[in-house]
Amino acid sequence: MQPAPTPLAAPFSSTAPRASRGRDLWPLLLIALGAWVLRALAFFHSGPLGYPMDYDEGVYFSAASLLLRGDLPYRDFIFVHPPGALLLWAPGAALTLGFDAATAYGVTRHAAAAVGALCVFLAGRVAWRAWGPLAGCVAALAYAAYPEAALVERGAFLEPLLNVLCLGFANLWLASATPSRGRGIGAGVLLGLAVSVKLPGGAWLVAALLARPWKESRRDALLCVVAALATFAVVVGPLAALAPSEFLRDVISFQALRPPDGESDRGLRLHDLFHERRLGEVVLALIGLGAAGARALRTDAEGRPTSRFFACAFVLGVALFLASRTYWNQYNAHLAASEAVLAGLGAAVLHAFSQRWGRTASRAVAGLALAGACLPGAWHVVESALWQAPDVVALARYLRAEVPPNACLFAFDPGWGLAAGRLPTGATPVVDSYATMLQDAMSTGDRFEDTAEALSAPEAQQALRVMLDACRFVVLGPRGDWQLTPESRPWFKQRFVRRFPTGDTGGVDLWEHRPPER
Image (cartoon, rainbow, N blue to C red):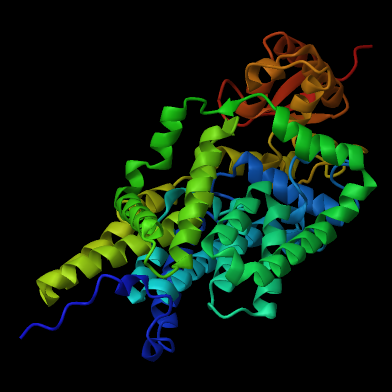
């Protein structure tokens, strides 16, 4: 005799069965451990600094390190985000006070992988509580194998911090239907920290307010909003108060007025947001999104705050990325936090339907959901772990051996200097050459069609030339070739001579200022 089918409403249960609550940690912990291995696998070949370093992670870690040395963002150097990430990455940056900066960053890369593993656990935990074990494991696997998330969780990016804070916020906000002052305040603190890392974190507050009826959650919501505002003020206020006009220029005006960059075609952005490299997970997430929408339209249904919460967070995230003036596919990493949980909901919905056809069918659907959640994404994560940057490793060896430690060194990408243990130096250190040049171009009030046009503006190039002339050594590389105009390249080569690598070898190259003619 076949067991009685589970009613369709079962996957939407807001709490897991009581008997399973003591055991639900172990599967999620094992998946989280596997996720850490997937991320840290990139460091097993030639060490954490043998893996390619993205421009952004070099900026964030260098800025955090300079902050600990007394150079303040906005006042002393340009930084175009709120300062939360600098404070949260400060434990790793603090190692530069006693150890080589390259060693400190290697430790921080392992820590970033651990942050990613925590995100996996939190995504699985909130889905398990809402819809049961299958949903929790699918959500955890979907996040673990999310290619864009894995890439940024190998370094000091903004998205790992943003995701762990937003998922922590969701776990507290959705932990129970019973109001709790402590949970409301704790959720607000995490949300305030998330917004202090990156302003789009505020979209999760909108999702939280839409997830529960206002009459039921008014007290919790007010506590959460007050705690979030207070936390944001404590984190951002001191640094913003020391340079208020520069803070507004860097964080608000720059992001609002910057020229478009990255992929501008909305159709291609949409394809990247739902890319086939995450095919199984995307299908499950869309099923979950549809189920959440259908549930919201049923006036006779009980409230299901978790499904509404993550559906709102996901839709707001997609809308934000489509509307943004700037888009790079690494931004998709933030979607992993909501998309993975919706994939868990989609798996629960499919499993509920399959139980109508018996145990064998339901087990087959559960197995397919678990496999689909992590395939083919896991293959892309493993494949990306094999990337190496031998030219940067060779440059780092040369810098250590041939460039005096006290010599002024400017790198167009701060990660290139960081690989050799060098942080940006100077009375006015340039941490983010890209943003610095854009700010110089935008200071005239001109509007530009794209970033390339802005970087070619005379104001951007003149300020750059002053900066380059002040340093004895310059690491040019592909980024420097891009940021220099055809008019500036001859100027540069008249004043600098290439020292590494020799010959016409491509890759990241070091140049030294020519001695003055006598």
